[in-house]
Image (cartoon, rainbow, N blue to C red):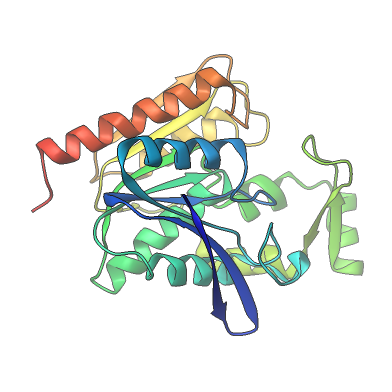
Length: 258
């Protein structure tokens, strides 16, 4: 069974759920205001259990079972936590990132390649929200939102996934500018599979297609789900996710990295 661990990172207490198993391990990266016990994360854990694979899940600070304030969160902060958790794994890993987790997965790959220590053997991105603070937030704000942001340092946006609006802080939005990827080639050093809903209103399909145009040196597969929305957590969506992992694992076994 998955064991709960606590990882201390500065003033943060990061909750990690780890399942022992063989490689390639699976590393789950949640989306914005999501956690490691959601339906997709649990499906990944069940997949790992049935295949005897190691699985690592965790909550960003301010999310789920981790400590810290959500409103103190930034991409820099959550990326630092992702790197720290990834460093506790061993051997090749398949990174699965959902929404914001897809962006963080790409940033993780870049950071590891800069350290010349990447162990990412493959990547599965679900509705990847690349550069979301800029492209999917700031650029979508109305004039009144920008004025509110300047005056009070945050704006609140309604959400389909919560009873209360999401607070978007200026610190989060400004910090995101340091992590923008679009506009230049993105190199992951591994095969990438993207699952995208055609009816996704939060991360439109055009955004995923734009990302594909930036992945110039790695094998990329984009599966567009005609009736899929943002969550992609229906049984048929989870079956596609598991199928993508099956295919990637078989391909890695058939064509191991040099």
